[in-house]
Every structure is written in C-alpha cells, then in structure tokens.
Length: 121
Length: 116
Image 1 (tube, rainbow over the protein chains, first blue to last red):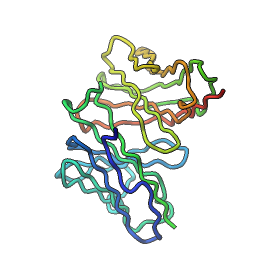
Image 2 (image 1 turned 135 degrees about the horizontal axis):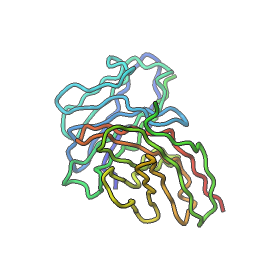
Image 3 (image 1 turned 90 degrees about the vertical axis):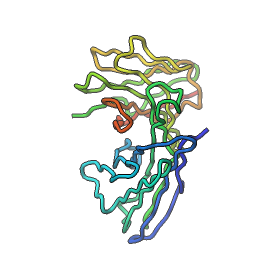
Image 4 (image 1 turned 180 degrees about the vertical axis):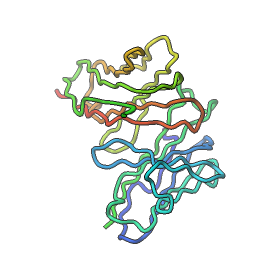
C-alpha cells in the first residue's frame, strides 16, 4: 500500500491565487521530504528539500518566496504555490525516504506520493 | 553535464519478450546508489530496483534485473517476459552519498510500449 499520501491529486485555480499541497508519510517518520516538479513528457526536477523543524533547501533557480515549504511535523510537509500563474501549471510530486528500520527495501528508496496536477487558468 | 543519461526516448517490445532500457551515469562520489522507477500514465512513481555502488552482484527483483557495469558507468534495466502492464515511463535515478537528505537525480526517461 501507499506509504506517502499527497493531497489534492488535482487542482484548478485562477491566476493570482495560492494553492497548498500536502504530503504525508504514513506509518513512518520523515525528517526529510523532497518536492519535485514534472512538466509534460519531461523528467522530475527537484525543487527543494524539506527539513522538519528548519528551513527548506531550495535548488538553484527555484523561487523560495513563490514555492513556500513548511515541514512542521515528522509526517507532514506542505508546498504552497503563491500567486500562481499559468506557467506554474505542472505536476508536483513529493517523496520521502523511510528511515532504516521502517523499510525492508534495499537502498532506502524514495517513496513518492501520487502527485498533484496543478492547472492555473 | 548530465548526471543521468537515458538515450532511448521510446522503446517497443512484444509481449513475453525481454527488453533492456539503457542508463549511464556520471559521478565522482565513490558511494552512490542507482534506482529505477516506473511511472504509469496515472503519474505515480513506483520503485522497481536498486543497485549500490559497492554491490558485487547485479540486483534482481522478480522480472526486473539491473545490468550494472561499474567501469562503464552503466546501469541498464532488463525486464524479462514483458507484460502489457509494463507499458509506462521508466526513469533511472542516482543518489550520491549517504544520509536521509541525499538527493535523487533523475534521467529523462524512456517510454516503453509493450505490444501484442
């Protein structure tokens, strides 16, 4: 079953509004979560690393004031797209790594949420 | 420079045949991990297989195996006995270093289409 839950799965919003996307780790604690963005028919690009209890680490070129990340608990990270514009329309997907002891998979792979398809009109 | 290169944008394979999806990587870190993920049209990312840089043997997980050639820096995914449900995007990814905060970098993906 899913180990990372992401909500909503899709959202349509008007230009200028803000959208919040939630990412929850189920049955395990995640001190670190990762937020990726994927444009149609392209690869996943890391936007930022969300750290519980501290500021997120953003990748080069990602506007921290536009993509607000909050990781207030060990099981929840949120991404808020502020003042959304049509060019922000994309597939946003979060991921978390189960800390050793919580996963039987070798390499402690990232487990992904089902993604959020954002359309800004 | 690209850290992960997947040179096949699309591949076709007949049902029940085997297919190899190519992946090469570039890193100077001696400790790294290589992953393959499957992304169906629904969008979720499904972890398939992992290969550690220090692993002596090629990884296998059911119908998936990883042809790891360290000197050539390649980590090709082999899917045996292809099924229609294998049709999806496949991404190769690399994690450099260790620790829970070490990032995963993805290749551009290969779209696999399994035909009857």
